[in-house]
Amino acid sequence: MAFRGRPATRSFGTRTWGNPTGNNPHRLSDGAKLLLTEMKDADRTGRTYDGPIPPDEEFLVESRDIGTSRDRALDAATHWLRQQPHCP
View (cartoon, rainbow, N blue to C red):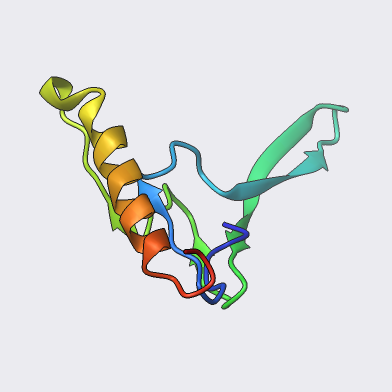
């Protein structure tokens, strides 16, 4: 998420698996703690996320494609990098 909204930056691959959220502990009267999800992470543009984060170029993985989506993402990233003026 640190790279989302950054100029001259792209992501390739599959969605993240986690949820970009934060928990706050609340102490109950009997001494127990209750953790509640009360925060969403935000990228540098202010967009918040409450579920898996998709890359700029997503390559879906199906059971028969295991191992090939990573290669497609790597090929796409390499192609994009080679088009950048600062990366010959």
